[in-house]
Amino acid sequence: MTNTRKVVYNTCYGGFSLSLAAQELYLKKKGHAPKLYKGKHRWDEHWYINEPHDVYRTGLKRHDPALVEVVEELGDKSFGDCAKLVIEEVDGPYRIEEYDGRETVVQSYGDWQ
Image 1: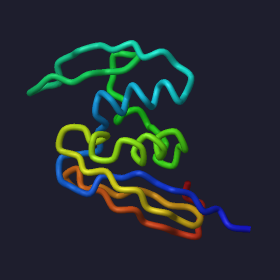
Image 2 (image 1 turned 45 degrees about the horizontal axis):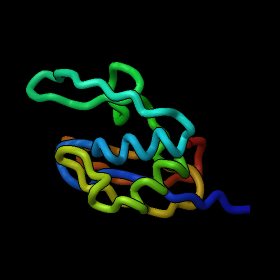
Image 3 (image 1 turned 90 degrees about the horizontal axis):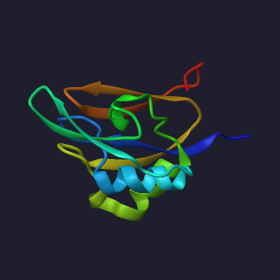
Image 4 (image 1 turned 120 degrees about the vertical axis):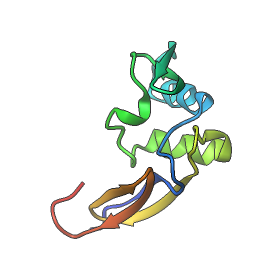
């Protein structure tokens, strides 16, 4: 039995983030009505969804089928600030490692999720 699934991650420096259009579509796919907030984050403005925090710092599961669908449907229009999102298929447990916002998917056969 395999545990193959698709994983979304960021391949450029800056950090994982979703565009406003991607956030709205993600919420709709999850059955929530988008309610947007505009807020400040140190040096610039960000849009937030449903709660006063941004979606990409909330422990969003990168293998969430709704997230994968959003990135597949919107392509580069799903990219947030300083992000270039890619989908990789993994078989089994994985983790995402990050350096200055640039991420890589590391697969293991241990207890990772």
